[in-house]
Each structure stands twice: as structure tokens, then as C-alpha cells.
Image 1 (cartoon, rainbow, N blue to C red):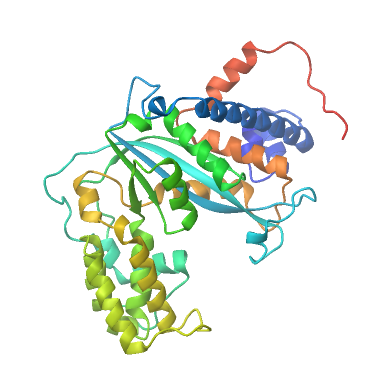
Image 2: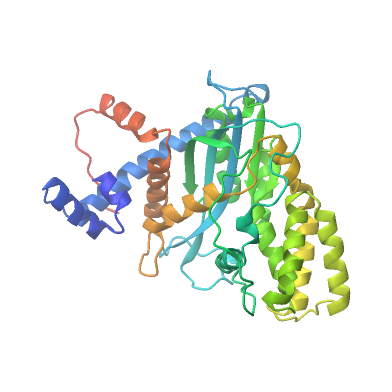
Length: 389
């Protein structure tokens, strides 16, 4: 019931799945109650683990409770969206300006152990063709930043996805997801990383986009990890700025040059070029439209300047570290498949339970296998009854 309730698009669909696949007549309401109950048990177990981590001394927090330590430990985080209709849970002031009064933010973390080779020089000095394919970069920019350049794309041969030299090999992923505030989420993430032995890994990376929340968590809990700005978010800003005030045919060569500079770790050259472009267009005014060329250039200049210290991509590749947050992006899409939708509304407790279970099932460390075994061993034989509110 819990598996069906977590993986199906709705509890009604879970009822149909259980009937068809298991030949069992179980109502959607019963599946929902069981899923929420088990999810809440896992949430309490998670809180116990966080409390236990907080009691560990600082020297022990920098060591590994595990015998095996990954060669490369990567932590990624980002936010998703979910609709909450709970009168006891007022919408935070910070979210009231966003579209839809029921939408709330979820926070998701991805902990990935990897293996890779360290190199004496950059193993992939030239930017992969996929990032200088006009049709592909148009699609990426449209999906991430909502920007699409005007004009016809230059003719290029279809590009196949390349196996970039020096790319780290992913070994094992675990996931954490919550609606708790940033401070509590940071503790959940660092406690989970400690249990995986990440603190003792010889090479550690914290990868994220430019959101302030990401780097607040990094500063508080992962400052001994190498901070890396997601490369794809960076080139989306570069693409928008290079094409601002130009059509795709005119600005494409400029984008390719700037993208190569970013790939090579020469972000200072792009910042200098953007400053020249800003002087040509003029500074953005206080009420500048978001889509105006001057605003696009100003946004890119500010973004790259603020993130410059996290954009040494040539050095990261030499160390065998990841440079994109693709794992957390795909993880959030998988979680959103269950919890996000214009017709889906959750209570506060129900949302947290579903997020926990969704993260558990996505974790290749199989936390639910251990949970079910220990739960069965601790069973008292008494049935669970819900108390009336």
C-alpha cells in the first residue's frame, strides 16, 4: 500500500494499481492513511537521526562513522513547489508574492558518492559541442530561464551526446526532501551526509545554482566542501546576455566565445565583455522591463560577478569533480511527478510524509529496507487506531 501510495500519481490511482496488480480491494482512503502513517514514522526517525548528529562532537563530525569512504562526495540542493491547503499553516511572508496562494516551497537534497580520476591538466579543455549547438542551447535556456533568442539558428549538424573526458562516475545516490525551513533542512542534509561518510572523503563538492539559500547552507554546514556553481545555469545567463539586442544569427559567435571562456575558467573575460556591452546599451533603470536587453546584460553581469569564485571549471575538472547539478534537477522532477500538480493539494503533515517516502524510494541506499525490518521486529501485536481530532 505504501509503495503504491507513494509512486502512483494519486491515491485513487494507487487503489486501481493495487487492484489490478495485486488483486486486492483496498480503498484509496485506506492507502492514504497507511502511506501518511508510515511516512510520519519515517519523519520521526529522521528527526531522531538529526538530533543524534547534533550531539556528536565537532571533531567526530569531521570523521566518518562508516568504514567505506567515497573517493568523491557530492552534495546538491534545490527547491521544488507543492500546494498546501492547511488553515493551521499560514503562507510565509516571503512566498506571498509568488503566483498562487497555495503554493509552498519544498527543499530537496541529493547526496552522491562518485569515483573519478585526478588529472595534471584539464582533461576536456574545449567546451562540449552540446553547449554550442544553437538548437540545444535554445531549448536549455527556454526551460531554465524562459529566454529564447529571435531569429534563425545557424545550420549545424545534429549533435550526439558526448561522453566528456574526466566526467565523474556516479556510484550511489541518496535523497532527502522536506517542507521544513532552511535551517532545519541544512541539518537534515549534513546529518545524512555524515552518515554516508562524506565528511572524511578526500574530495568533496557542493554544487548548486546561484540561489542564496544554497550558499547559506553551504556556508553553515559544508564550507569544507569545494563550492561549484552549476555550469548550465551560468551559460544560460551568458546566452541571454550575448543575444540581448541581437538576433541569433548575429549574436551566436559572441555566445560561443563567452561560453568557451566560462568553460575554461576565464570568467573575468566574460565579465569584462559584459561591462563593455552594458556601456554600449546603457545601464538598466530602476523600472527596466525584465526582458529588455539592458536588464538581461545587467542580470548576467551581477550573476557572474557574485558567483565568480565558484566558477573555476577547469580546476574542478582537473580534480575530477562534477560541474553540473543535473542529479538534483532530475530528482526534483521525479518527486514533483507525485506531489506537484494544479489539482493536487496537501495538508502540512501529509505533504511532509509523502516527501519523506518519495525521497526514501529514490535513495539507492534503500533506507526503507532497514526501516521495514526494524519495524517488524519492534511490533507489539497491537493494531494502530487513529484518534479523533
